[in-house]
Length: 311
Length: 230
Image (tube, rainbow over all chains, first blue to last red; front, top):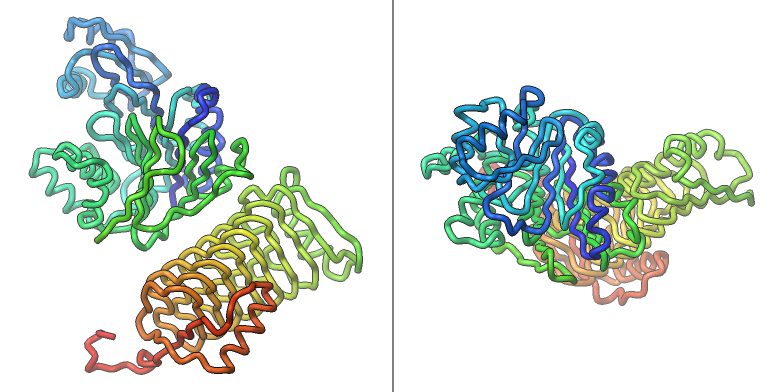
């Protein structure tokens, strides 16, 4: 099954409550995906030089002091590290590829979960409730987030196989469904120099979209072209620093419900994940149509920008 | 038969509610059950088997009033997947919209949806009646075997794909017909049926403006020469 959730705040006062509103969504969708969970939270892009790198120690809590000290030594920068258990946000002026190489060489038990000026990412194996409590998701603030609860069907259960998947900077994707041609998509992208971390189908979809965007497509154009390239079932929920984007395949057998108010836009696999949200009884609640791209801006209020996929 | 009972699902589980509806309610003096705070929960009032009025206030989840027999269930809100699936008799009314597979496999009874129904509405219908005031999504009435579906608005792609003996009436546009579904002339008897169903559903729509869709019956027998092209 799997569950997806997304929340984009429009009323400024609610930004401090982003995590508090989202945790019941994620916990509720634990019924649809109890084996792993993840959350990508977006705040205003930082003005500081450098980039944020979400790090995760897959073999237990790393010696973060030593990690930072070593990073300062190799980067000669004024890098900082914000630690949350086995997860930490490294802020550094070192180039993204260099950070990846540095981790691989010196800290092989640390995975790089996300890169960007706005995104911070958490994901792990275990029940969504436990993961939310362990990292203190409730206290998170920001403009928007997307989350996922996983019931693995096509590849193993591991922190690296949990969603959200990221590629490039400030882009992430969660997926309910399964792709049937991830291997051919992966092989084609690998020939173009795109590196993969897992054999997961969603990672193939995520990297395909990010590759299209690097080739000059907007996210919406990339999604449109993915209908010709990605075969399978999907409800995709994506986020960048500027927007949250939702699309369902033509057959639309993977559910999604949207609730829009003046205060927020909420997306869940089922309405019950949204039932606790303030004012939801009067919200505009609807089921997104198949082959329609819904794009909600972080700054612009009102209805989403919709784009019909023609193919 | 005059008493009324209220359940607030903020404090009572769906399992407790349904156990009451299945075991204590039949044969009691209770004629009306009202349910508050459904909050999208699944399987509310599934498996009813007696004459009773059930009213659900708010948006409900999957399988609402599934397998319904005799009871009249009203939802003042939207419902998730498979409302009134496998209904045997009685009446289920959704005042809002319904998600996928509304009335799936219903053998009897009447399902009325005041808003839109999503994809696969009336899939595998087996004798029940489904009336939708709004639109229905793609693959509605897929493999519908018997019964009637009335769509006052538009129907999505592949309407009535692989349909058997069910009859469909559509008031609006049809995106496309599925394999072996065809449009047929609307006879006087169809108009009469429609008038009765629309009146019985409390929907104001002109019965003469509907189109009738039924099976061309070309899939009934295997045709080796067709090379699976229908």
